[in-house]
Every structure is written in C-alpha cells, then in structure tokens.
Image 1 (spheres, rainbow, N blue to C red):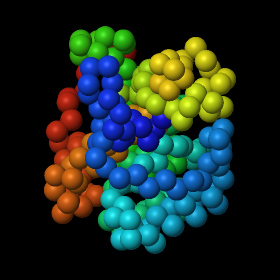
Image 2 (image 1 turned 60 degrees about the vertical axis):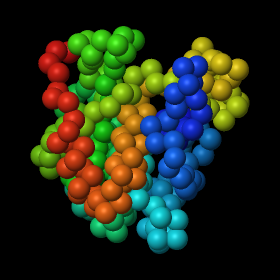
Image 3 (image 1 turned 90 degrees about the vertical axis):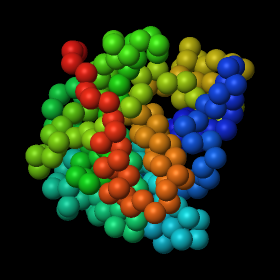
Image 4 (image 1 turned 135 degrees about the vertical axis):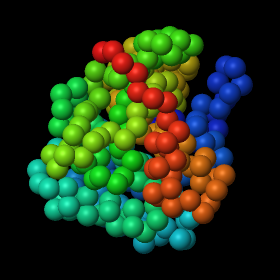
Length: 233
C-alpha cells in the first residue's frame, strides 16, 4: 500500500497515475512480517544493507513508514543511529510521525531525529476539491520531541488514502473487507505511513529533476514550498 502510493504506475479511472513518482525504481528491503511487525535488529540490518548497497542500486530515498516508542535521547537510540548513517551517506530519509496523536510529544522513532523529514498526516474530509476544510488528522503524532525539536516537518495526505494491495489476500485486507474495492485490488487506509509515502514520492521527483540535490536540499525545498499551515481543529 505504501509503495504503491509512492510510485505506482497503475492508472486510475481518470487515466491518472495512482503513484506520486511512477517512473521511480523500487528497492524493497524486508524487515517486517505480513502483520506489519518487526524487531529493532531486523530494521537496523535492513537500513545497514541500504547504506552498503546505495551505489549499486542508486538508492536516493529511504521511506520509513513505521514508528516505535521513544525510550532514550534520539542520538542514543540504535535504530536512529542507523538512520543518521543513511542520511550522512546522502540518502533522503522520510519518516512517518506516528499515529499516537494528537497529544504533544508523541513523535516516534525514527521521526524524532531532528534532520530527517518527518511527516504528519492531514485529511481532506472527503472533499478533495475543497482545501478550506483540510485539517490535521486526529491520529497524527505531534511535537515537540523530547529534546525540544519542532516536528513534524511537513504534513501530507494521510486520511482515507486509496492505493493498491497485492491481491486482496493480505492479512490487513482480509481483516477489513469493508475497505477493499475494485476487484480486491484497491484498499483504503489512513496513517502517517501513507503521508510519508506521498512525501517519499515527491522527494523522488525532486531528485529526478535535479540529481545533485543533497538530503538537506530536499528537506529545505519541501519545507520552503509547502503551503502555510491552516488554522482550526
């Protein structure tokens, strides 16, 4: 679902791509099981593999649509240490803020790393043509981080997002058939994971346009050109 949001080349009923960056190449590094659960050790091994194989596969963007509770300073967390190595290696890291909002100080790992791109979720309230009622999703985690950094850095569509599943037989799809449509292929989900996928696709487009951009360039460009935050609840 997340990968499809970022770069699916499938067309919708209106002939438009379902993915944000349909020409991007996908490298899948498995660290989670079919229920979406994983260990710190497996995720760290996956991130280390990505850094080691960055040049071989031209990996420029790392989507981290997952979140774990914060148990230490961000620089002491072993998963965050792996994430910081990826950023230092020139990989744009996009992390979901987490779905434990809306209370403050609910940003999870690795979204609490100050210089990665941490993404919260907004909802269009089922009126995509009317931006005036767009709001921060109630589940979207909020900052500041424990260390006092303002997060998330940007928000993106994360409420009731439609995207493809494998064949409708995924455990999540089977558990929630009410969200499955179009011959068991299109599934609706909500979360900051979906929002992070949107931003990962945008980052890929930015790098496609200008491959010389650094992770800092991409983050600054995204934040500088984002719409001004709306008011309301």
